Length: 129
Image 1 (tube, rainbow, N blue to C red):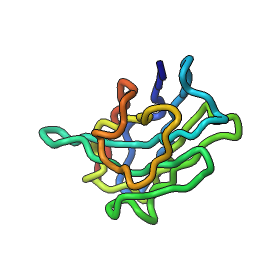
Image 2 (image 1 turned 45 degrees about the vertical axis):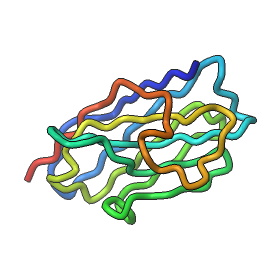
Image 3 (image 1 turned 135 degrees about the vertical axis):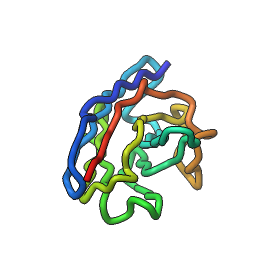
Image 4 (image 1 turned 180 degrees about the vertical axis):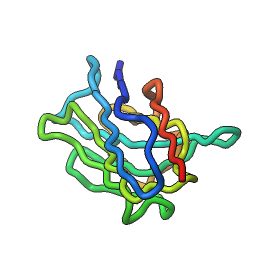
């Protein structure tokens, strides 16, 4: 299994910044094996969408909506995943989730929720003007 726990959400004014964290653990998650982890968000009444993902070797991919504003990263031990969010806008308000693909698999072109098997419980981000 892979367990993920998000933290760092909250309320912020438009133009502000937040840093989300995700603790990654579990018997099947091995930092020396290929993996793909990412951040997603779900606005009220909408589908969950991919924002950014990173693999074991640090290769990243971003959604156009957050490119240049959000940065995904991980710690050296590969036990924590981060999402630095700058220049936040009202439409960034959503529930944010971290997720992992099946351990042992690279990201390749995967950038959709269907390719991610393990999910955290989510953390709310609210941006107001």
